Length: 355
Image (cartoon, rainbow, N blue to C red):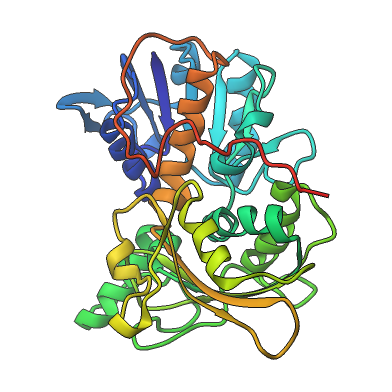
């Protein structure tokens, strides 16, 4: 299968190549695509060198799949042109997420909504993905009324610029800034640009994408997104108000048996999710499960995941594998390497709220 990776030289693009190789996706011909300044460079995939090419040449190569990690403006311009050529696009930018004609997909939740007619498929925001992998089974069981989430986001969420700023500040070097203020030894209540309502774009992604993916506009979400001087994963403090009461042990067991989740919840043994241990893992880690005694039917929990993997690369590759296995794209025989907890065909890939 011919696969185009658009943005192949960037941080997320390289991570996607890594995940494609790890999962043994049937790439018979890789088409790495990047900006004009990167055309002609070489990247290595499965021990073979490939030359980076431009967009038009990539379309002319007629890949079956194209996976985009090149920013919203690039996706708005080029994804429709790939789709018009019959190429299925999985896009990581925010360009198509809230488009009512496009599916916004987390495979563990709503992959079964995909059809052959879906030629542009949106990958959700990284913070949204890890939160909703956790919330979806809880919403199905108990019904969610309201969510209050605060995120503590790795500098990797800002790409190489974020990493370079943190490392440069620690080493005393002058570097190009990814943030409005120093990030080393600091926490910034400023993730992405501010909107007219006082929230940042990152915070509004958590609000809007939650309702779309869970297919429930009644869920109330409020968010605060904070970049922190961490590499390896995003962490989230989540407070949930349910429509009905719950048994904490039953709830913990439900999460432990849900697709893509590992529960780490033994405070007596200092066991809880951390970015340093979630790094380079595909799962979503959940812990610090405890009842919120300040109001009825409410819960506090802590969610951590590697934002470059499950938050971007792994989620997109899972979508690609789902399309392949469900014959939604042309396929050939191959074996996927994956763990029981992160299967490429999610057990619960069709989500509907119980009424």
